[in-house]
Length: 43
Image (tube, rainbow, N blue to C red; front, side):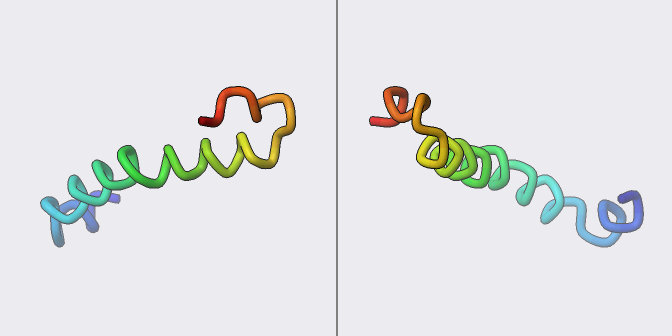
């Protein structure tokens, strides 16, 4: 991981932010769709 941060720290931080803002919500949405009981939480 250090080599990646050393090669392009900005991209690493940006990717981390994008992952937290986009990937995680999409993961949760997909999981909620896949989980029937969680359907009530999805809007």
